[in-house]
Image 1 (cartoon, rainbow, N blue to C red):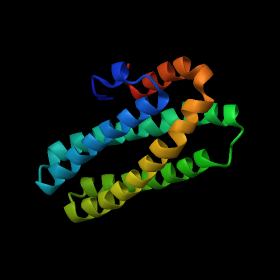
Image 2: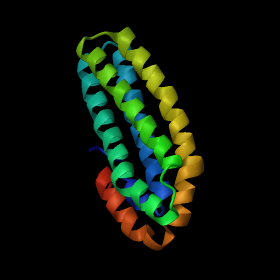
Image 3: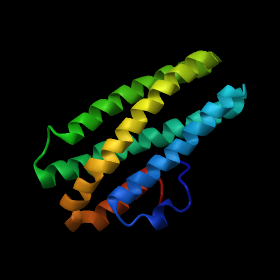
Length: 158
């Protein structure tokens, strides 16, 4: 994983950690799109691999660490975490489609898939950063230090 060097030191809350990781994933995503647009397939593959690895690690940290802790603390199991998990499934499908387009060296198909992925990621991140992460900070305050360490390790920022 290729996390930004300041992620671990700058994040003091779960919302801060995961929001910073969103920005990190956004940067890797932009690098992949730029490389495909420029026809630099080798750079595109490397950048997309970085993006995919980091995005999937982000989903795993949320689904295996953050969401279960939030659900246990809040009692909400069918609420915002259910919506986020569903959107993760949708984004995994778009990642797979984009990966196939990249393997096929089909810039139009790749950029079409990533345009859809970008819209979904932007909407998803707004919901997480504006609603879910603040709820996690509030409900998980007693366990914040432990969860922050575990989630940072899962994201590769430690």
